[in-house]
Image 1: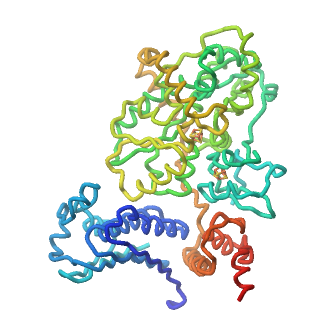
Image 2 (image 1 turned 120 degrees about the vertical axis):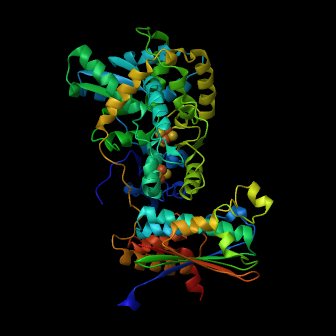
Image 3 (image 1 turned 135 degrees about the vertical axis):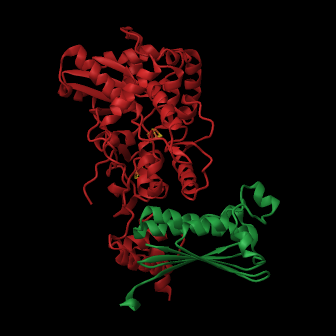
Length: 143
Length: 421
Ligand code: SF4
Ligand code: SF4
């Protein structure tokens, strides 16, 4: 049976410091999930996590992409960015800890809630990164 | 899907098959089929965008007639708040209200008075708010329907509170029953409306089983009659009895002003509202307490069934409000007003539910398959959203094909490209 189950894969490029475009990927993912008929509370959690991922890529990286994989029993959101990497994951996961630039903070972003929020809204959360390499965040939402 | 009645519809004889309305519809409810526009009823939120943009006046709102007064023994005109901005300031507003007697009504009611009462109830709801982030006003039925269709996760933020129209109808009906001894059904309440979405909410109310408003007549259709009657109108009664607080509900910001809210957001114009609701759904607006959104630019004074340009109407309302002042509002017994509104809210027994009109299938697996097909078809389309296929965008055509309502051959651009190969 398993191989006949379809998975939809959506991919969105997110550019470095493209603040004005942050939100496009998450809005699109939200629209698709609504059309598929996913429960609205789950849609909202996914949308918030995807949005925080977009913001993170915009603020902290050299650019990257958001991938959404939707199957009948779960949704996986992967945020993959190129760039600085995260030196100390434990610090980054602490509420309020932030390495965002002043510019980003002035625009109301980078309050240090991104990763903790992403973890809070998802059912499974994993992060892979080290200084100077790519960062891959994977979030799973059960349906 | 059950047959859904709504007010905005199309006069097929006037439709020229241009694509003006197609792209402006915020819920992608319009298609062109055989050279004529068609509204997908369940998707329409009655925002009136298509009425505004149609150069041939082929879009209209279904309303009732003055002659419908014959069905009742006693008729009450519920005059909507935007009336305050419709006439030149040299016309006296109380005389305008009195002219409805000349049109044949037995009684006339100033709907802004109900907004005065509602301001008190709204303040109470916000003071007792239990959740973080913005609560959403129920005033604009087009926005409520938009939320049901496109932003279902925000439904639990909607404040359960009737509109001034509904409260006015209840108070007016009770008053008339007491005065005349007639039964509920013998008294006709006619809302003199600025808005097609409100007509729909009379026939298909949200939260309650039946509206107390019986009929709706557009401001547009009585406007010139009132101007003609005006010189001969005798003042029978002081009908205008609301304060500037209630009158303010005619325009965007009015509700927030009425409760002296600090962290509020007032947004008008359906596209702007959609943008802000998108942000709200992503959790961007958690520092806001109250949100009032209007499908129409400037709020209800910009309603599709009004006569005056909404900016001019807004300026007039400002002048009239200054003159009338807040003293009527100060004089209201606040505890009693709150009691009246809370009593009326007892009829609100149903929850607001999402309207899954965009959903592809009730089975998630099937829906995912269909979504996959949409993605595949979309890749074959030119992506220029020209509208000549009759759908508002290439994406919408792909969806229509998968829903079985259109064919890939409807895309003439692609057909042309195929032919060249
Ligand atoms: S009234 Fe609004 S929602 Fe309905 S068809 Fe017209 S533009 Fe679309
Ligand atoms: S803003 Fe007012 S007039 Fe316009 S659709 Fe909403 S309720 Fe109706």
